[in-house]
Length: 332
Image (cartoon, rainbow, N blue to C red):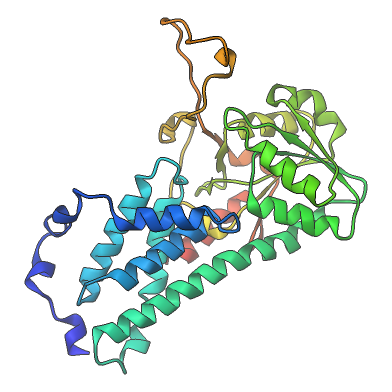
């Protein structure tokens, strides 16, 4: 094991100096991540985990410190992706913590290549766990939907679609889907559910308050679950939660633990700025907007925990107040 912990001259340099030569060209992990993300079965979290595992395979590091630095650089590259979820930073940190906790297994290894093979195996295990989370959450949340219920949802989430399809195996219910402009991801949810025989009604985002009294519950996905137990998700989730509260309807969230993020926003202003690339709807086919018009197209918003009834996760069914405890366990 002596070779594993030997520091090279490269490792002795400050991390900024070690990473600087690699920062000019695009990191190869970006190509891997984009390729895996094109697989409709892989979530952004699973795609990132598999891409990070590939990064270990490519690594030329000869020490754990050098490998950690390379993974840190890969994580920074992933965070720079325009479409990367807000929870990607915490996911990369969680990946490094999970994969590199191999102290006991390393005792019988004599070279660093063997260590890397072990790390790759753990990365593959982490990816399988991420994929399995979808099924676990679907089985936990499906009993929530009663026969004959009308469920309101928003945006597109693979875990949410899995939950609806699991419930549809034993119950008959219908789903109202808000379009989720400006991205329009609600149409993806509608199409996938209709293909499987689930009755769907698509409504405009501005009609959420109009249809809420006809629904028994609201069930949404999330881009990130933050320390307070609140969620960051597609724009419009927050207003849907407010309307649900006003109409005395429960508001549920389904999200994998890989989306748990070490951040504590207090308002919309605390979120990183992110806008949809879609053309402003008011000017589709009407030419460019007036020069003095300011058009905002935020792609995400923050829903405080006070509006959330329960969260369905692969760690169990949680109240918002229980999220901080689970985060401590994940990153302990």
